[in-house]
Length: 563
Image 1 (cartoon, rainbow, N blue to C red):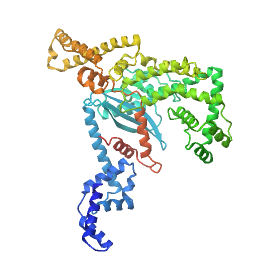
Image 2 (cartoon, rainbow, N blue to C red; image 1 turned 180 degrees about the vertical axis):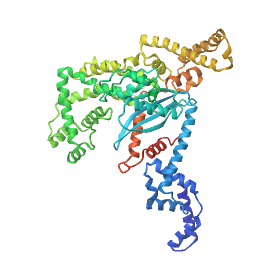
Image 3 (cartoon, one colour; image 1 turned 135 degrees about the vertical axis):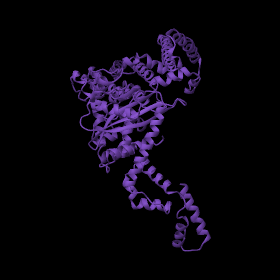
Image 4 (cartoon, rainbow, N blue to C red; image 1 turned 90 degrees about the vertical axis):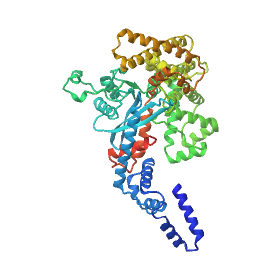
């Protein structure tokens, strides 16, 4: 922009100073600017930034119109060729990688998310890394890597790729948790090689992934060096688990004959309407009547059925049931009965807590592990209200099925004292999500957890200082006098503090350290899903021959440009 403004000013000055024809004025302008303005290095850097940030193919630098544009804005400067572009991209990748490694070296705790993705008949494993800035307490995230997977995505292949990435970036001893979906290959990889993994080895029946049976004795054989992997603790994606509740556990409501009858008839009419909209003629009619197209469900997008029902209800509320009748009549479909429309209203009302929770837990910038327990607790409370609400006529069995599903899948999480402590370390939450006896027990548990954390931190600091040679009694007294009393005093002061801003933790060094430890992880693996969305833009339809290495480097530079 600055270069363009400078060119404009010089052109205006020349036009005012001369009465030459336009062609000669342009020639004079080009001559006067030759060798001036932006340097060649600046032009090269801007071109590289343009290609990476807008996800352009490398061949754009050889396009005649692009070359003319650059040379017009920076006369006398050359435009790099496609091969040079690839070299500069690699240099940029190496520079960003070193900066990321340097930043991660200063962090004590990180968390990662991982998932598999396929495009153009190629499979990849994507990994993102997340940490909390120790000064500002703000969430930071970056792409770690995206590696090509050849063959089947078995547990040992995934373990090897994750292990390699963590070693490459020297964070293998800093990862508090790796968040993945409920795929059996990921579950088994961390069951076999994870440290203190909370996942079980049994097959998850809600997943279509095949669970491979292997001989454990062969894995433990010392000669099998390829199995010597060490993975961090595993954490299942809460958003994916909630989606399983909405899709799988909700089917248990069909054990009630009345619910099953009205649900199947209602969704049959909805599905017929959504299917019709795929044709251009039907889509034109929908847009003519409602002013916009209806959302349609997508099997791979969480919350899509709820969003589609909500969209249908919103246009009916805005335009009236008569317009809906007009639409289905025009499409040759049967009309919705009043009971079916009432069912959709109740369905949206019952499913709303799950939908809101999914939106909350898939956040990244202002999301911490401590939000998981309060969110799940809120879901259970809201579903409990719906179960006892006399106004809920059709969907009471659905509310019960969802309540049982959430309780079954998140039962162990709700009993995890560390997650409770993580929630209470967030000043805006701080026990406000608990009620009655639960609140009193949580306060006592919080003090014990922080005391244990501070004692462990003090023990570590004692062993790293020059007093290693002190006897056990001296170390014990040092811990008592330097950590226990200040901890209780700091906790009591925190509990009395009414500030809800995260920055208030700056006044409590022990609690701040605990916050960094307990809240670094994320509840869901949504960040790596967003990475794949960008990857699809890089790996566009006309770039099917893009090499795996160039794909990884361009995606890395695009996602991590803020570094």
